[in-house]
Image 1 (cartoon, rainbow, N blue to C red):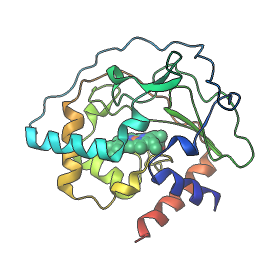
Image 2 (tube, rainbow, N blue to C red):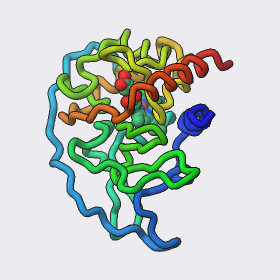
Image 3 (spheres, rainbow, N blue to C red):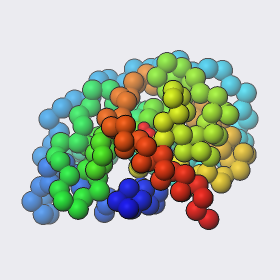
Length: 224
Ligand code: HEC
């Protein structure tokens, strides 16, 4: 049940309301500035593609509407303004290599603690990291095929490797019934953006939790 609730929360657009930022500050006061730095942006290498400008533009609209940037573009806390700001020079490049995990443990009742870059999520069963969606061949989406990308959204299974389930809070099921055309446009847009070399860590999740999420993902596929 807990997983189901987590999955449902995750599948709605992530808002600040459901998120406990690490080391909660006193109510109303800004959290202290981060005590870490992230590596400079490293330019990657993207494969050639033949998508049209119309497909790319449609993909961009869909990605903006679906809020993919909210989780896949890292944020850093801006001490001057007192709010987290997306790092657009790292657009959609996922959890930055070497960036910290969430700093605090889940308090009773919490479903997630989100790390300082807003790309690492401590859930009741482990820590999950937002993937690098930029078209870098080595560390991003450059090596993915369109077919594998479609399959991920339609089956809730990880793109590569041994077919482990996609973990929350990735809202894959919201796109499970999208048309080929829409998914192709999203993929086209991802092929067109600047490639960033950034190796995202594997999730820190024990095997029994994978099995449980697998069951929940199948249930989500059967939902109307
Ligand atoms: C609420 C946060 C969130 C949002 C919104 C989100 N993602 Fe993700 N995404 C994640 C996380 C976390 C992972 C890592 C999941 C895992 O390791 O199983 C991920 C993984 C992925 C993956 C890699 C899947 C794999 O096989 O490893 C792709 C592709 C992806 N997201 C695409 C998207 C696209 C496209 C959008 C917008 C339509 C999007 N995501 C929106 C959090 C999010």
